[in-house]
Image (cartoon, rainbow, N blue to C red; front, side, top):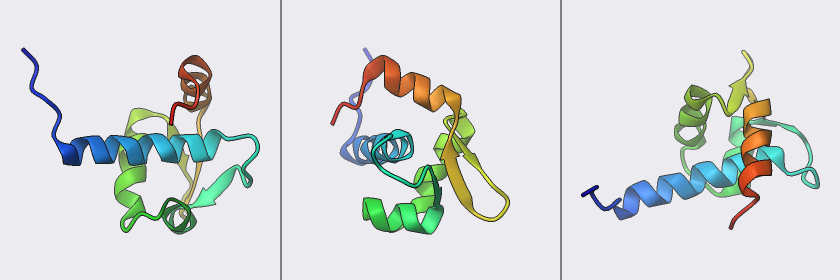
Length: 85
């Protein structure tokens, strides 16, 4: 039987999902964000901790100067599951 996810893991999953939705929302511009601006928008203390797993998963690309944007995989994921809040 799989272990129950703990509260902290669930919280991080929600923050990552919100970050992907922010980057893929066609009504919310810009399409490219600084990590710091994303942190302010999502009200996250450590936005890099939210962005890093998304980069590792291939859902977000990071530029050399600290900006991030959604990959085609992120847009496809959102198209498949929708923006479930």
